[in-house]
Each structure stands twice: as structure tokens, then as C-alpha cells.
Amino acid sequence: MSEHLETNPDIIRLTTHDGLQSCLARRVTLIAVLRKRRAQPLGGHSLILREAPKQVIQVRNHIYELEHSRDDIPVLPRPPEFYEGDVLVSDDFRGLIDCLDEAAILVGASDDLGIELAIQIALFKSMIAQGDSPDWDDLIVPAVGIKFRESRPRVCADQGDSAPPRILRSIVETIKRDNLLAVHAPRTGSGGNAPQRTRGSDKARRRDIDREFHLHYWERADGTVELASVVYHNDFSISV
Image (tube, rainbow, N blue to C red; front, side, top):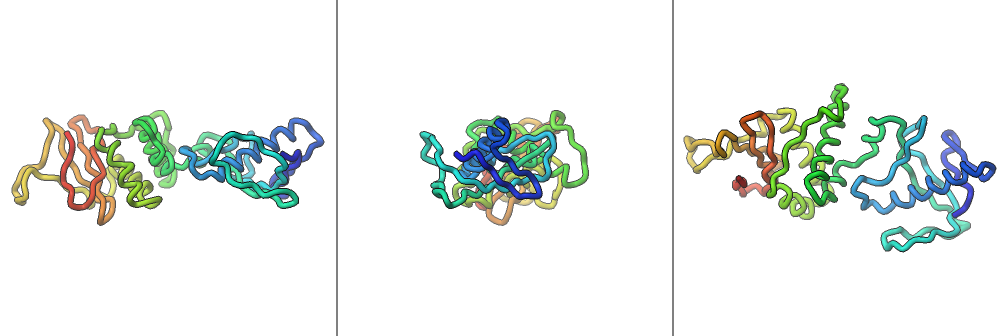
């Protein structure tokens, strides 16, 4: 990898005159290469600086050699062609969260912790966008039911990149109790007078994600939420 990294001249220029700068140049370029994969569960690597000039640094560099044993690294141009990419940067916690892709995390999550992280990031960003100053440690996210964990990848696979943001939006609305006109009460029968489906003192809820998909969840007696499943329009089942 070359010892020279050139980014937007208005932002930063690193050369080989300083050994530390050269090391940083190689690392920044490597981050840019890894971001090209687009399959990172955290939406790509990012760089934390003492002072970030802006969220994205454009990288333009000669890469002479890159040793690796991975099969997901994109084909790199050969000198004299330049490699071009970008790196997300931040200088505080909020900036770090902005660098994360909650939709990619939701898709790539292999356990409840990953799903909860995606929801927490989506909730944090939503509150920031509305002018709030949320405390990350105080954010409470719903419990994840087994059927939700199982139904999520199927719907995401069927719908592609558009599904995860819509699922997360509906979950955030559920947490914040927004858009209540999209919420319905599943009933034990087809009649309009049939009682609402319950699980002890918990109440079943069905929220419209869009015209095709719906979020089923339990509104627990203690006020918390448990995600039950993501279902197609004609599926009214809810796991207990």
C-alpha cells in the first residue's frame, strides 16, 4: 500500500514525511477498502478523531499491494489508477451513532442483542431528529420474542433493502406510542364484538408497517412491549 494518502484538500492531506501520519494513512485507506464490502453488520467501519471536519472523508490513493485471505474484498485498481473510497468519521458519541447503519445491523443480527442494538440506534436517531437529547443508557427497547427473531430474516429477504428501515420505523413508533391510527387489536374471533386477544394481563396489538406487512406485539401489563412477529397482511396469528 502506498505511503501517500490524499483526501479532499480542504479536509486533510497526509504524506510520508511523518511515520505516524503514514501509519494513519494506511489505516484510513484500509477502512475505505473494507467499507466497499457493503456487508458489514455495523454498516462499515468508521474512524474516531479528536476533531472531525465532517462526517465523510473522501479517500484517493494508489494501492500497490494489499495482502489478505478474504474473498469479499473488492477488486482494486492497479497503479497508475487511483483507488477511491470514503470513510465515516466522528469525534463524539452522537457522531459515532450517526455512523452506524441500524438497518444493516437488523439484517445481520444473529441474536437478540443485535436486534436490540439496531432498535436502540433507530430510537436514538429518531429522538435526536425530533430535537430531544436522549441518554443512550436510559433508552428502553422492547423484548424480542422467538417468532419475531425467526420472521425478521424471511421478510427482509423477501422485500430487500426497503424492509428493515420500515420495520425499525414501526418499532420506534410503537415504543414512542406514535401513529396510533395504525394500531389495531387482534381479536379472538371474526366478529366485531369478539374480545381482544390477551395473554394473561397482556394485550395483543397489530401495527401496520405498510399495506403488505404488519408488526404483531404484546403490550404487557407493566407497560413494556414484547415484539411477537412480522407477518404478511393475511396472517393474524400471534405467538404466546
